[in-house]
Length: 120
Image: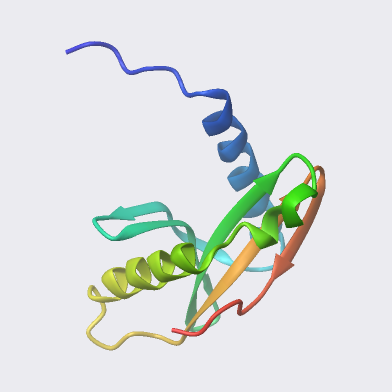
């Protein structure tokens, strides 16, 4: 089997954005449950716990705010994939806890944490 490929620059920057988002959220009192949850219907960057609830977090990073910036890059199709992946994740829980979807948008070096961006 060939050795794994090194990450692309885009993947490296994405990982750095997730690291920064995770540090910010844990600094706000949230606890990491799972990172990069991947299933057949989508991916969730961070699954955090806050109190008795789960927070599904999408992390978007943009070098510049052109084309609406990081927050505007969450398209309706991406929202559907997030919801579907969260529903798939919640199949593990016979009695699912309260949940919400948050966005951590990083534009250049400015981080914005936007809570409850969509409903499940």
